[in-house]
Image (cartoon, one colour):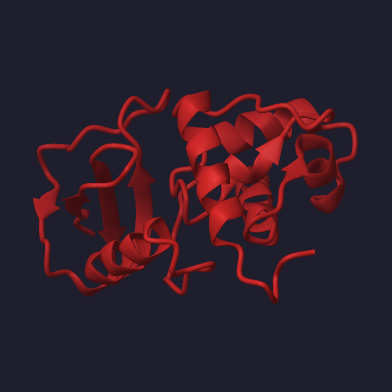
Length: 167
């Protein structure tokens, strides 16, 4: 199974997108604590359908024209990480949740720190919205790609919330 990759410019810097078997495996932000550089056995393929769709949908998201993603995903991680990442997908566009709430959602109410670690290891940033997770008091905490980027993503979503989603 060969990893295909492409890159795209974004307001957060150049994103590295990866896919395997037609499913998105990564949206990597520059300077991420768990940065994943291009590997020698990867193949650049700007025309790979999953990557082309991801680029198009991310461009729409950054333009304020998309509030959800419709992409086949295949993040690699432990069963616990997978459960956390699925829970992140349930946090609505323009909203936030807490590490404690995600711990509750995955059936591990005392595991907020472990949730934080799983959130920080999310390989499909933005699409799997780890930026929507904040501290118990609403403060911006723990974004592996930098709190400035987290703030930018949350601000973009606040500006782009369509009326039918606004509370």
